[in-house]
Length: 283
Image (cartoon, rainbow, N blue to C red; front, side, top):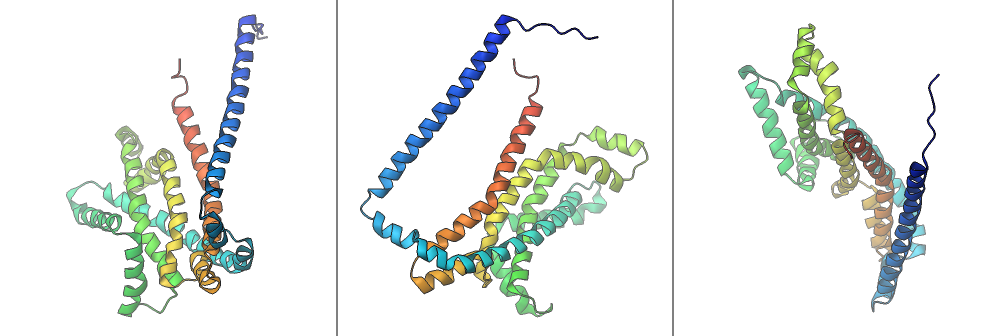
């Protein structure tokens, strides 16, 4: 039977002190946050133009009137985001795998993948949207598709260039001994990448991937430049009808609410990963 050693009075005192300090830190944080928020609020509401800004950007009646169309537009953004995420993950893994191939025979593919990532990391997303959304349909090589489809393609092309570099960094961070051990067991190069290397690489770069996903949630609103009636375009229509900018504020808040769960999840996972890596290193 394992023996249970009694906790010393010194340790009990230390734990009580830690609890007291934690409670004190929380209270100080709450009070300082409230004071700061009150100061900012009083500063804003006492500016000379606050009434005009409030009427133009924070009108409740206009927000209620614009809600149905803006929320319907947000659903379009969510659909585009869903398919874009799948496309980006597939294409970026392929690009990252190609760029990690060894041997001179693979040089043309490596050069093509490198040129692709350099091009689309250098081009602003809004220019890619114009080129893909208006240029490719103008060639008449493909069947006629909606602007929503071409906006999704533009997002995939742009973000796969960024995400592929994240995957490539993760793949190269896996120690070469892992590949050698897998090959010594008789696994092919493809099996080694799929079973051994990629799972470790994804685990290493998950926080960076989640941050890219948050950025894509925000940039999906740019498809409105192609005429897609998403949340941003719907807000623009409502603003033109009411001569009030509140629909834009409403759309912005909806995008924030859409991204907030992923932002908090990213912060939690990053902190958890850091704590796991630093376990036992603190004195």
